[in-house]
Length: 614
Image (tube, rainbow, N blue to C red):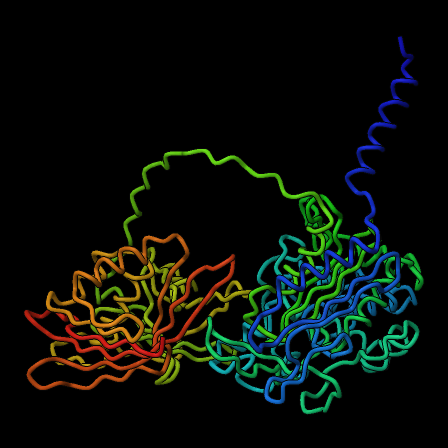
């Protein structure tokens, strides 16, 4: 009979053996072979943008290869030395700069951010530097705020000064600091400002002196001015579905939250420093300290890094995307493995994270297969009754609404029994009722708009939500102006509403509602499918929408034109965008159409369709 100490020793030995088997360090030859397989899977047969991939093992670069084109017009290929833009992977370099300043005694991670940026509003509760570092501060994302103006990120050249001005104009936070986690670029714009103010150097000067030069990162810099020529830089591209590739460059001068220019080799040098802790263990320990919420729970986000696991392996990394660039940088400490992937095409069949994980997958046993079990799905629950306000009820929301914080103005009007949000003639969208005083907007009706009232029941405030922005309040600045429905409503609005109904039915996979919009003598000409009858179209849509792949349709803004047809109805022309899920990502295409609408017994129906450009 074994004594307790012997049993314990035996248990520890078996546990250690099991752990060793699970996390056994692969050799360099296995890693190189796995990387080759991952690249082969990602490479496209036709000319396209691509990626550079770098892998390091035990602190030594063992693999650097590239595929695809860095410049499509001249056919210049990507190489391991090609310079790409980092996207949000840059955040760890700003976080590391803040940590070094904290080690120098110049910044307190748990000090209020207003100590360093006094123009920030007093939010009534401390917003600390650490809150900014791990996205628990509730600061609204400056890009989302700008989008409310109608001329957002990507529609204009945004400077660092403009981004900072947007941030300091926000008089409220999305939530109490440390109550929640919500990713926001604004935090890292503020952190960049802190680095520059406290150090007395630009971010370029600081990172060059403290990181790039000591580590030999000779190809790394910051996009301070988008007009600067960068030798060896890959151009960024994007496409919709299987459409043509087009330039998609980040024409802006905001940096710190992104905007780092670099190579896979430089990123591997950075990760080697983190593994070796050559700039100090305090730096690495701080960067890998996960955030803690008020309730004591830990979040995966640390300081510019995400600390989690992939298939049982501890993973420390971050992804990024800016315009057409997409990137991923990760470390797997148990294997002493680092993977860097930099790509220049938004719409590649395999993205940077998938490439990195493909390399890791090739070093692990195959995933266990889960036996298929036939399960009878439960009967779908009856849909909740949707709020159907009257025109008089809708009229209480109309007027001109303005937000000083967003510097944005919207007009809300009632037209033919529906509520519309208008910013300019080309930006007009229907607000779809959800529950009392709550609406949804956007192509898929996914963005919330809601109204609040005073004690007397009078509507006083309009609220809008955006990705990375929970609540932007608007105040009414003008007396409501109501457009009531009438038999003489403009033909354009009538057809636009019918087209909107078509998208709603299509996106809800409601074939009967969709087909009710088509006349029984429908002729449908599809340039990839020939002439079809009503019955064939009905069967086609039934099969198409029966697929569980998120198929959806939306009209492309600004393309709709409507012309009257005497004695018949109207001709509608425009472009619409179809998307579905393919291999876990959206596959979209944009196509043109001509539709003839016929009005009979006060019911609009489509009699003729030509769909082309497929």
